Length: 120
Image 1 (cartoon, one colour):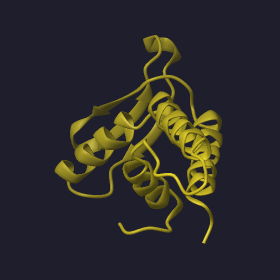
Image 2: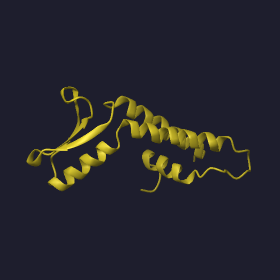
Image 3: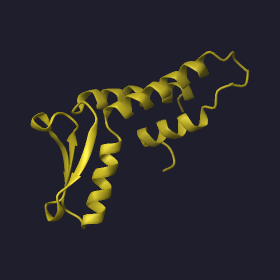
């Protein structure tokens, strides 16, 4: 099993790469009744791009899925990746055998969930 700081850095790297490759900017969701729900980047109306579309389930599920995806846009992912890297740096700065001052448990839960290596 890798060191906790390595797990944090691996998740942060993957999260950052994924966020940087995605459609940039803040996202919002827009539901269009029977046509489903879309996730759009939050640019000027003429410049908006569809990020994702949900229209295969019943309306409440599509609305919830679109709202969730829009809430986890690239700026959020980049902030979480930064937190994971910061926590890894704190862990790496702890002398061998000393108890870490930072609380790495929440960050490790996030990293492991993102990597698919921890409990869901």
